[in-house]
Image (tube, rainbow, N blue to C red; front, side, top):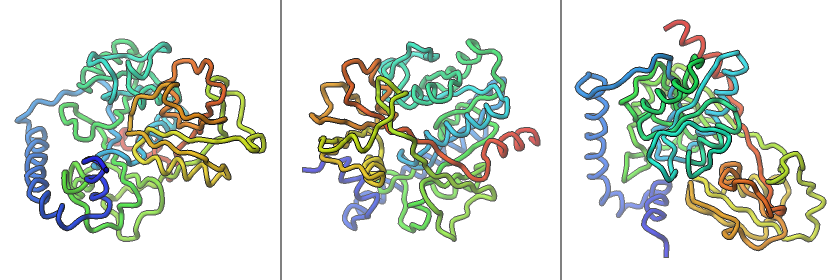
Length: 337
């Protein structure tokens, strides 16, 4: 029996007439509330705070699953290549503590959340998490006063933090749709018209529909996979020929696990079992399926502190390629502002 959230998410992708009639009034109410809240911050009726360094928000108007995290990693890495001292702030969804946390080499997913920890390990950029992005930013700057720029992972709707630039990530699969709606009838947190006010839109995961051009500054990103490595010995790469007659399972706790499974199949790997977990789900060694080789995402890999006794667990690395160069665009915009 499908759970309620599964039914709703299926409705978002393939609208059901009965559910549309039921949920449409709630979406209209949500739209009014969201619009008033943004207007209250923009007009100054609600207080927003500014950090002493420029803030670039990379977010989305969808309720998750747009491929944002690899884009944040690519942007931060691109800025670092340009010599910019850049840090990252995030809410840290799924972590156990509510206190602001500045990440260090001993931080766990329970401390920081899986995505911020992944970004920290991938980029090496100073990172802090907190439900208040402003407090996270202050803590990050206190710990790393050398920072010149902060990238806020998510938080497009977190208007209590002032931002110098807004970048919205939008999935290619939705660029041609005419049936998108706001929560709960659809997956949007803000209307499509919101994209006209951001500084740039990055279309993720494919080619955009020809008619989709909500911003003057459009970018495209696609994911490239790296060589699968052993969880507890990243220098060791998976030899596909060595899989032979072994049983292979894949596990993913991400928004759209089928993309991960399809990526593995496209690499020529036969999957005997797939396990799709909820996005950000906790995962431990005991949760892994019984197989000769288990392949997981990098986002799930950070949940295993050391990988000891998990010689059969392998990780698929991915990176986002953004065209044209988003880091160059950001620096040019900030210099001209």
